Amino acid sequence: MKKYLFNPYVLCLVAFASFTSCKNSDKNTSRATGWQINSKEGGFQYNTNFKEQETAPGLVFLEGGTFTRGKVQDDVMHDWNNTPTQQHVQSFYMDETEVTNKMYMEYLDYLKSVYPPDDPAYANIYKGALPDTLVWRNRLGYNEVMTNNYLRHPAYAEYPVVGVNWVQAVQFSEWRTDRVNESMLEREGYLAKNSKYAVVNGETDGGFSTETYLNSPESIYGGQIDSLQGNMKGKKDSTNVFAKRSSGVIMPSYRLPTETEWEYAAAALVGTREYNNYRGRKKYPWEGEYTRSGKRKTRGDQLANFKQGKGDYGGIAGWSDDSADITAQVKSYPPNDWGLYDMAGNVAEWVADVYRPIVDDEANDFNYYRGNVYMKTSIGEDGKVQIVGRDGIQYDTLSNGKIVARNLPGEIAMVPVDQNDTYLRTNFDTSDNRNYRDGDKGSTRYYDMFSDDEELDDSKRMYNAPKNQIQRDSTGNLVKQIDDSNNRTTLINDEVRVYKGGSWKDRAYWLDPAQRRYLPQYMATDYIGFRCAMSRVGSKAKEKKTPRH
Image 1: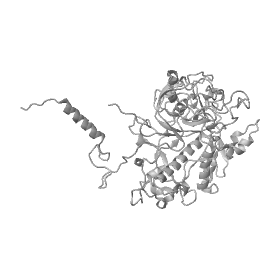
Image 2: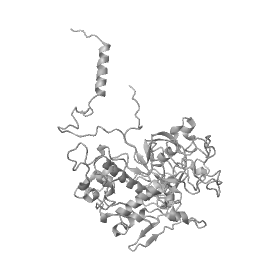
Image 3: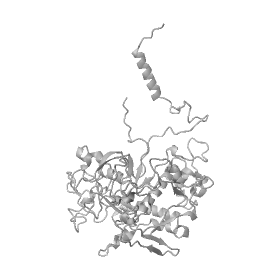
Image 4: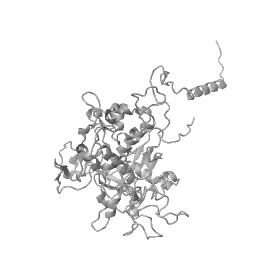
């Protein structure tokens, strides 16, 4: 019988060779099957050259992590609507500044060019996107100069846009997504050079929608995509070559940040190593307990634009002034440690969440967000996705009578998920989850609320807000059905949204990132603006850490 001697040196060489071969294996050889992928002979095609998500226009990268969300400072309002909870946030991107008047004007000019308001089919698209400039008016104040000039005058071009309600902010984010992805596809050769200007110049009958491009690319630009096909490098024939999600070219959507993301971004704990700050003891987006700079070069300068006292919106002119009485030009004050400007002061900002005084961290402490409404693409009887046509535009009449377009021509029609989609699922069972675990039943003293009876007395509900119905008739006149019930006890419902941060109109108390307030999503003010966020796909950090072996 042969004898086998143990040789550790040989084993080490074998192990090293195996590790080296795995490490240096051909990226176009499948580790599952050994088949060749991306080969000229055939087989499956995969993107093996994708590096990392690039930073889209206007955004700053924020690496995710754990932080203490909620108020740990004095709660002088005694509302206790944001008690401290520990949350974890995934990495994401956020706008460096608030959306400015110039940025929003670009949106308005696009809508006006592509969907002319003098066309009856498009009449309310442009009008529905217009900010409410009358928010500047005050019965006992002369503010007509802002009413007439703030949005459009070049002196205010780089000032944050205001008078925008939550619905309009969401629609701007959707429009921005399409414009950026259109530009990305053009840059990568999937679309011909300057294709993005074709619809603005009236050269096509329709525009570009990201979801339509991904699901039915031949339908974009009103079906005239053939004339706008790009010239892909390395491909002899670029006809009918379309990008997919697997191409890595399509960016995730611009959107409003969640409340948790916004608070994480404003707190900017990345720049501190003090334990108390990590646990939520940091009062403002900057270090220290004061609103003035303690640095030698800028000592005494205000670090944000806010109301300093009764009748004091900027300080004494000349030496104690914060250089602003209303809003200030973006980047007028130092950024926080993430590189984000005006996360305290200037304007408060809309976030995505539906407001509830209860933050149910027992249900979720990862990417917490209240407001999920799950939708899916509408499929026609022919098995194809349904595209919104010129006559298929749907409009919503908001509670203040303003009409806004729910969809635009060329977009994919969306419908709520149904029982077939939620069958036997444990993570969700309905399309609309805005009021999930919000205390409607559990927080009431009427225990019969736990009954399965859906026809319950509204007076026994915790969130029995007024149910006003406002519509416009065929002649454009408002038809109001006002709820004058004496049993209503709250203004909180599923269409009330959170806004965060202090503004030029607020005292320093509201500069604390943990503060939260709410307003109906159809309302606009002269002190609320917004900024966009974007999710990150792939690795948590932009620079990958060396793995431990």
